[in-house]
Image 1 (cartoon, each protein chain N blue to C red):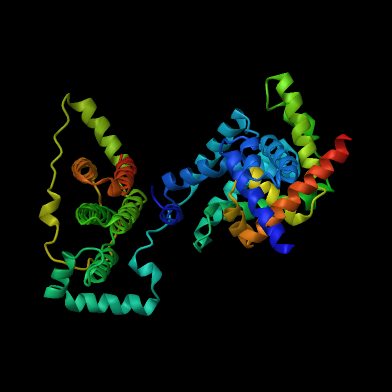
Image 2 (image 1 turned 90 degrees about the vertical axis):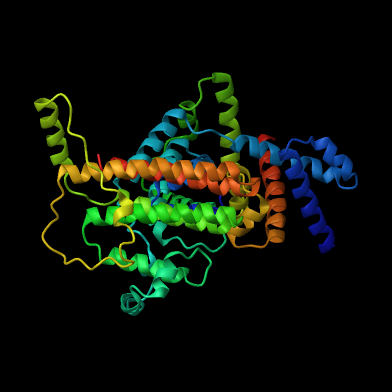
Length: 294
Length: 179
């Protein structure tokens, strides 16, 4: 008896799914003639229930709610980058910093800097980057560092895609997203000065002075660990520094986007969704980071 | 297609794109779930908004355990509904038919729809708590049986049995109502 009831529960659910997907009630009843008399009224009631419940929110309400949700989103403080150390107990942080400092300049750290996700030395690479962030107190320095880390993540995404590793592409994309969000959340001084300087330049001369761009590659990997900088007075970020960073970042955004696009074009179908996600994250992340420098 | 776990991880980092995607994917379903639970469209609008604002505030505390993200939202919505009924006795409520009128421009269609929703909302109140939950999740939120099972912490077989008894009970209640 119990078995029969369970069988009927299954048949009812199967028919319900089929009818929801577009089959007629009659077709399903024809497949189960022994149960048809009991099934039909239940299916009709279920369909009536589903139809009655399928109300749409009013468009005005939908717009208002969406606006309020987006406003609440804008008011939220971006989450501090949940980097390597945020998941570890304090003693692990201390030990990791000491070990990385001791290894600085050694072959291990240099080798780790070229490692890829999933490789033995990759956690050393992550720890090294986290230590670099700890010893980069200024917002401008952090922004440059995040820009370099984003370049590394994009390189990893492309290399992992070449190896056909979808999961690793997704993980590297998440790390890329964290870097870009963290960069967009930095409080980099000099924005008002820049605006004033731009107005002054505009009023004083028809052509603004060209902004000198220091190549990012020149400062990258000078040493694997950046020398610890003493936390001094508030950084003096002139408008040119800010504009230099903005120019640099926009150049990297374009180059990285093109590299990802080329990887997407060359990728097999199985990798395309993951690379599309990376393209989406890069486009939105760089846009937010650049807006933060306006 | 990016998996939900990675989408949620991005949302927990307060990534606006990921949060907006979760919002858009679940908004209508949460709204329907609440309307069917309380039978009051105006109140349901405020409560739906509140569900998403609450979710936004507490998303960092969400822990991925292989359950669909929507089941967490339905739990927040369910708590809102419980709160609503707790406070209901202390204040006047907007009658269902009054609130529905605002939502549809076609009077003929509105009249039909009002009867259906009113009937349904009243009829579901006659069911047991578990039956009500299955009807709301299965037909308003449009979850599959497997998703309902995860959201309610029951086996698939138990949900199928509940679905059967709930539909049969609804049919009886509605037949009495129209008879």
